[in-house]
Length: 456
Image 1: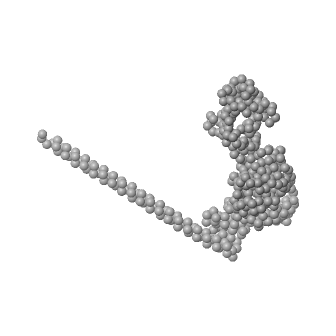
Image 2: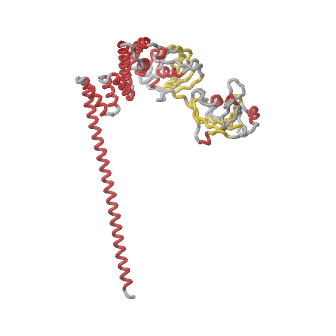
Image 3: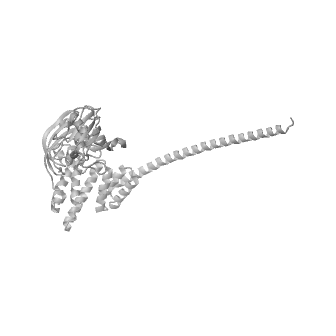
C-alpha cells in the first residue's frame, strides 16, 4: 500500500492522483473506493466487523470545499464497524486500516452519498474525499456488564438469529492463556448449552449471531466456567477464557406468537422441569433463562376457562418465585424485588414472595422496608420463625444505624460548636484589637490637641 504525505487531494486532479498512487480497497475491486495512506499505523491487529471504532475525519468535495469534520468539532466519532451505521465507504475502508493510520479516500457516489447527494452540502452523484484517522478500536460489548465481548472474523448471512430453544450446530475452539483446551463440533439447544459443557457466554452470544458467522468471544468468569472452573478442561477458578465460534447452522424454536395456548402450557411444563434441574445444581443463570421463557409465553395470556386460567396463574407464580430465588443467589437484588412484586400482584399474601423480597431488601440495607415485609409474612403465617428472626435482625440493624447516626451527628455538632467558638473568639479578639486601636487613636488626638493649644 502506498504512502503519500505531500500530494494535495483537492481539485479536479484528485482522481488522477488516486489512480496513480492509491489502492482499490473494495471487495470486488471495482475502483469505487481508492485509498492513499498519509501516515502508517501501528503494526498489529486490524479492526473486525462489529468492533467499536473511533475515528477522526474530514469530508470534502473535489472542489476542496469542506462539508463535514470531526476535527472542527474537536470530538472523534464512534460507530460499530460493518453494521451499516455509516457510509459504505467507511465500513469498507476502516477494515483495511491499522490503529493510528491516517489516509485519504476517494469515494464514488455508490460508496458515499449516492444519486441523491445531501441537500445543501453534496450535489447529486458526487465523488467525495475523506481524510480518515483510525484513533482506536475495541471489541463489541454484548452484555451490560461487559462480561461478553465479540470480534467478528467472518460476517454471517441473512438477518435471522437463533432464539432461546433453537437447535444450533457450531464449531468451537476454546482457549485460556493461549492454551487450546476445547476443539469440537457440537449441537446444543440455546438456553441449555451447559448440558454439552458449553459455557454460558457462548450460549448467550447465539442470539446475536448469523448463520455462517465466525467470531471470537472474550468471556469473563461469570460467563465462562465461574468460580468452580472446569476440571475436565483443566481450567481453574475465575479464569477469563476465549472461544472462537462458527455458527454452521440452526433451526429456530417457535416464537410465542407462533404457538397456541395449549402448546405453551405443554412446553412450560418441560421448561419448568429443566429450570428446576439447573437451579438444584446451582446453575442459576441457566435456570433464569428457562423461567423467563415461561413468563414470556404466558404473561399476556388469559385462558378461556377456569382450568386454563388456573394453570396460567400457577405457572406465572412459580416462575416468578423461582426467578426471585435464582436472582437472590446471584445477588441481583433489584431483580429479586421485581420478581416478588410480580408474584404479589397475583397473590398479595404470598408468604414466599414477601419473605424473599424482605431478604433482598435486608441485603440492600433497606431495613425498614425489609422489616415491613417480614411483619407481613407473620401476618400471613404467625408461626414462621425465620421471619421472626429476620425482624430481630432488622431491629438490631436499625438500632445500630441509629447509634452510628447519633455518633456521626454528635461529632458533627461538636465540630460545629468548636468551629463557632473559635470564630467567636477570633471576632472578639479582632473587636478588642479594634477598640484598643480606636482608644489609642483618641488619646493621640487629645494629646495633639493639647500640644496645639499650648503657647509656642
